Length: 401
View 1 (cartoon, rainbow, N blue to C red):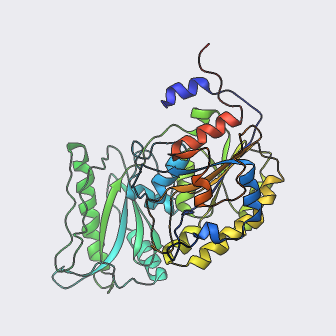
View 2 (cartoon, one colour):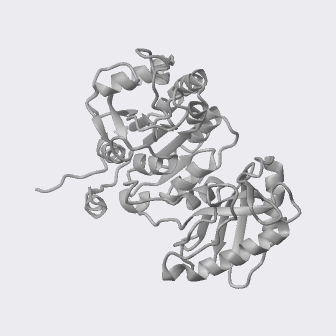
View 3 (cartoon, rainbow, N blue to C red):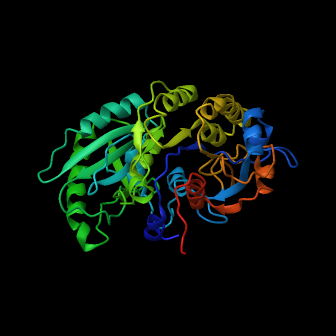
C-alpha cells in the first residue's frame, strides 16, 4: 500500500495500540514431530488472548528470506525492509545508542592483529576483553583530522561502532577487511564520485590509528566494513498521526524505533518486568507502544531451547499487566524466527496474534506455530500487521464513496 495513499485515509482516534515483539520468537522442534519453543512453553495467558484474537504467520521479507533484526523490525513496524534498507554500519551505531545524524557515515569496526609487515594474523585480535576494547576505542577518539569528526564507540570484545561526521560525505565506500588472514588490510576506495572525500578522510584516520596502536598487541590495527548512512523513512507521526513510544533495553532496537519516530523511553532496570513497569508508567502519555524482548533471540541463537521457553513463559506471566490497561489493540509477535535447533535466525514464518475489541476472533485458544497456521490472518507480509492494527483501532477511514 502506497504511503501517500495510506496517509490520506488516516483518521484521528482516542485508541491505544500495543506491539509486543519477542525477538526471534519463531522456532522449530528439537526432534522430528516435537513441539517448538513457543508450543512447549506454558502460556495460559497468551493462549487465552489467542482465543480472542486473529492469528497468523508473518514473513518479514518474503518466502525463504532470512532477515536480521534490523529489517525484521522495519517490517513489523510496517515498512518494506527491501526498499528501506539500513546498512550494517548504521545498525552498529544504532546498537550503541549513537545519535546518528542524516549525513553521518557509519561503519562496523574491529580491532585485528598484524605482524611487523602489516600482514593480518588474526582478524579479531584474539577477541580481546571488552574492557580493553573500550580503552582502545578511547585512544582512537583522540584522532583529529581537519574538516571531519570521528566517533568510536565500543561494542563487545574486538568490535566497535565507527562514525564519521562532516559536510559532503558519501557512503559509497569499499571495506578494508579482506575477510582472510595472510594479507594486509585493504585501503578504502570510493565506489562513486561523491564519496572520494570520504575515502581520503578514512585512509588518513586508518593510518593514524595504525601508528597509535602499533605497540598494542594483539589489537594493533583496525578494519572497517559496512559503510552506510541512516536512511530517511517517514515516521509514525507523519504516516499515521500516532504519538508512539518504544520500551526497549538493547541499543539497536531503540535506534530502529527512533528511526520510525518513536520516543524511546529509558527503562529503569534491565529485566522484562522493568519494561512492563515502564509501559504502565507511561500508558497515559502515548497512543502507541512498542515493547521489545531480546532474550528469546539470545537463547535461540545460543541453541538453548529451554532458556527460550523460560523467556516466553516470563512474558506470558507479565502479559496480564498489559491487558489490565485495557488496550484497544494488542499485537504479539516477532521480528523473525531464531530456532534453537539451528542456533541462528531463520526464514520460517513468525507466529502473530492480533487482539482488538473489533477483531473477528478465530477461537483458537493456543498461541503457537501450528495454531497460528490455522488462523484467519494466514501467512502475510509482516508490514501489513500495523495497518490491520490501525484499522481495528479506528484509525483508517473508508476509501471511496
